[in-house]
Image (cartoon, rainbow over all chains, first blue to last red):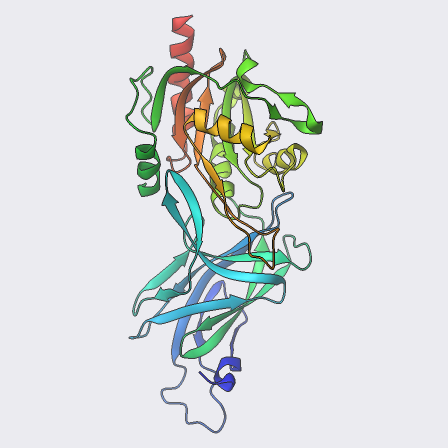
Length: 158
Length: 197
């Protein structure tokens, strides 16, 4: 993937309303087909930190209306020192968070990022966050333009 | 559900049922609590095994846990809210198994987001291992990245341990239990203990 492709990002103004993310095609290219859907993002949220807690998680549902799998290969956020793709796995009678090199949204399927399951972990916040703040998240995809999301930090019903 | 089953299997064979509890993952034959000192608010020593007169609902986790602990603590907070008048009979306890980053005061502030009556405890690494092992669980502090030594994860079991007012560990619940299940079982537990007096 070229740097140009990497930096050609898709902005979702309202991620929670389930808008289709589409390729931001350059003016010199013929848009064929127009408005190619990449991933539909719904329910994106960052639960507000609990007292004293500074490791946060991003949850959302990623739906893939296309006929090819879409693979998440990492994520970054200007508000955090480190962002990782995580799963929660049972091991020796314990639950362990495991960093994943990638996550796949299957063709015509979806990937749900939720508590006690796959999630995007937000580590080392640069500023303390609270309900009402926003988190800017760039999710890098294999062979496709990155997704740029703005997530609300919200009081969460755990 | 899978997670709960795996966790239950790791505890070994199910002991004889002391009480008829439809939702408990594991029921003990009134097992004494481990005689292990833990640390409470302001650095005060707390011996949970010496407490009498209240039921204890105990969860062991850590405040930096972004997904598992808040979910299970949210479940426990919901069960406490469902107890109604029975709530005053229960002392909820959150034990942080991450004493390097969590003080008892920090654990208390965290836990009280789920119920204002929570005690937050921690302890020495050795005492925490002794305590949680005797209760049927475990935890493992994982290596931190060299560039970021403060940000490490802690694998841990996710039981809610139920201790009766005589200081006996009588049952363990999974945080994956259906909402309302621990609160419903608590009625059976109270009846069983009151009948046996």
